Image (tube, rainbow, N blue to C red; front, top):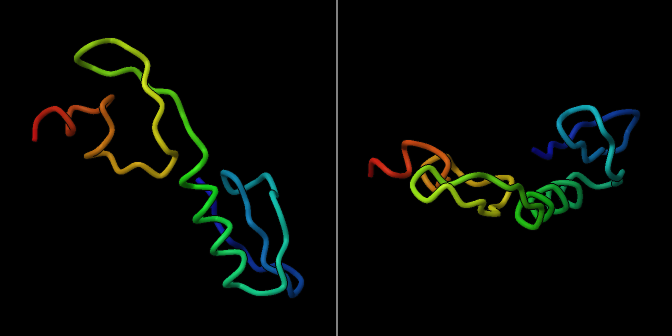
Length: 74
């Protein structure tokens, strides 16, 4: 998960709250980068029904994640 934090007058794009990715002077630029990274960064999950590995975006909601029961119960 990518977040934006303000530190010493600059906005930092952070990964998992502890690893700095980039620094921006404007908050809108930092938010835009965090949004973009959340959509292009992928994670691998295992589908509950088929058992196959599937790549999904990091910011995928639980209802759209094939590795969750919520996805299959809708």
